[in-house]
Image (cartoon, rainbow, N blue to C red; front, side):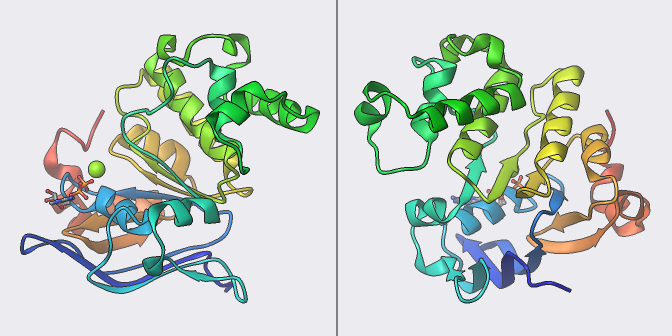
Length: 257
Ligand code: ADP
Ligand code: MG
């Protein structure tokens, strides 16, 4: 088997004596689309905090990339980790509401430019082509001149995914993208993520089982419980696992939709 692009080994994180993440082992392979599920409080968002440097593990190893260019992420800050190519989408969309859709993507392009340089400098034709392609991909080409604040909730989420792509993120960490979306928006989001797999390595945290089923297909699903991997496998295997049913799927609210 090839070497993982992201390795998380024996990682723990305690908050006020509470083990949010407990001896966690997790391996993501290049191009993979992985879904992580688990009940509220299972440690899913904390898991992303640890990968992105927003929080530091008490112990354990988090490594990104391949030899000879691999990095120990526990030594780096949030900004450095992001620059390496790990992009995160938070649960609530965070776009620049006063800027246009187009400018939001310009502002995310990788490169040594500040806000002023980005917006007032003429973009190179390569940058413009790239943004135009991204706009099509996230289905916002008809709204490129809209202020991002005027977009529907689902559209903001797609814009934010587009911003991660504009940043050249190799690994995309996407936290509950379907939250607050209509069924149609959710389905489109699933199609978008599926189309990005292969070119990007993606971890999606999600509660919505219809959505998980759509994107998981033959891809592995990891179930987190009490900060630890409870089980890992294909969607159907995970869904029928009695341990999972007990802690998660059987709990009503998040188990069905
Ligand atoms: P999930 O995303 O699976 O719902 P979280 O990772 O958000 O779970 O939270 C796991 C546990 O860790 C929760 O009990 C939460 O209160 C705790 N926790 C997470 N982040 C912090 C923090 N910054 N300070 C204190 N407790 C936290
Ligand atoms: Mg969460």
